[in-house]
Length: 189
Image (cartoon, rainbow, N blue to C red):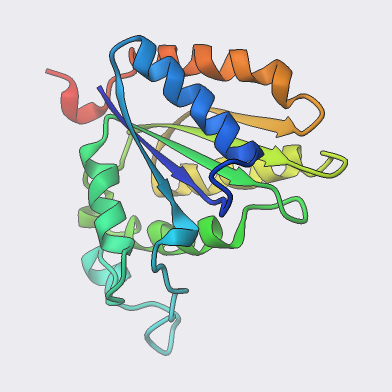
């Protein structure tokens, strides 16, 4: 069982990283393997809306024309059994790095070949708000919406605030254990 954990956070020791680490520890305790990717450390450009209609080969071929780390990460998603998307909450929404990545991902998944290895793949969302924490639920709605558009099987989206993070860490670890039982469509007989 392989899980890809994609973090939209710049801080490898911050609250979002702590939440992702709890999921990772749950996976590991059940023999699952995980790989963490911090998006701000990758080169992910914004969508260029290539043609006059705001599309490009994403719509006609299911891939992106931009040569950066995007296609490498899409390949990692396709090879994983499950995917976790963890983001800090900024202004009640996704981090800029995760938003840029998902904007391009939802475009390529409009084409059948772009959906390959993504459709129905179990995905978990984690939205960690600092400050007053009130933006986490709105961010969770936004993340769930885009993951559904991409075709993932969204198993849960968890809003977290800095005030309840310590309480939710044990739940996240339990979810990590549970993720080892989720099957990707590719792994089913």
